[in-house]
Image 1: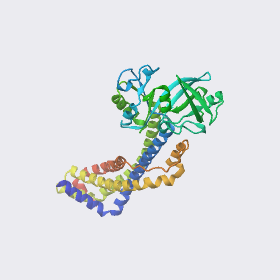
Image 2 (image 1 turned 180 degrees about the vertical axis):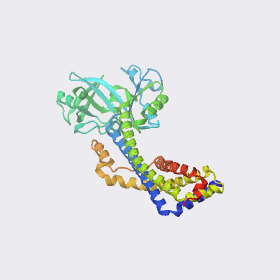
Image 3 (image 1 turned 180 degrees about the horizontal axis):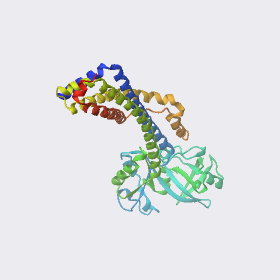
Image 4 (image 1 turned 30 degrees about the vertical axis):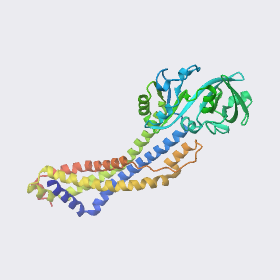
Length: 407
């Protein structure tokens, strides 16, 4: 009952000074809108950056054989190197784990070409580049399908063997002879890394008698910052396998995104602090104007805490009104600001990253998270409440006799 009465009084007092209340609430609204819009831009940039990182960075996790026992580890008997293989069905188990964005199997074998020791990688063209990252193919293209008799070779190897795009390459694996067409030539700048070839995994599996088996599995996570959680989930789901994370990428992404978040939160808080001083100034003015009213209220039985609660409630209502308006404005501003700053802001940063990829640049997708809306609103209300504490305390400490005589 007392709270209801104080609410009515608070609304009445604020309504008496509509313009002042509106301007004070506007100060809070500006800060809340700025915080929400900047947080939304960070969230939008985070989504875009994750998409770009997934295209241009390597895998996050590698899964290898840790034992010769276990359901996923049982390789065919009599095959050289069988103890290092795992069943290809592990790929389907990995894909079901939460947080996994993409997964690809790799079968690795060693052979010799004209006396040159070469590593042969059997890969799935549909998923390999998505997980591992695009090879720098400088001539031709990457493998076109998982069952084509094609090969992509390194620049050093092509020069060593005198091969070019369209040439035929004779490859011997054990007792099997393959004739493959050079589909493309890649370049990385280091000779030892260019002494390797990539062939469709199904072709390599048939040639080596390892149908259904792979050397290791590469995994890319939905969020690079959640690699450790995905590693734990994979370790529990795949007993007997070694799940190894590439923590460097996750650390860099986390650091960059956290820095952006803290930086823009600080900008918003500065603006909101200015709004808080506006609330404090308004409440001090209200206390001064209502000194006689406060004295009368105390004279008829109002306690110090009742007066204190009344003024804190008024500042809270100002924060709620301003925060709500600011949240709405922030949502609208989140959609307008990226376009306004264009190439000089987040969109430009994302485009700069995406220029490293073969995919066309896309517009920045706006992400307004409910938790960011609630956080911005809560900060706005909290600043307003804090700004009202000192004026409310001064009002509560007034002496009734002096206050009643105030003119």
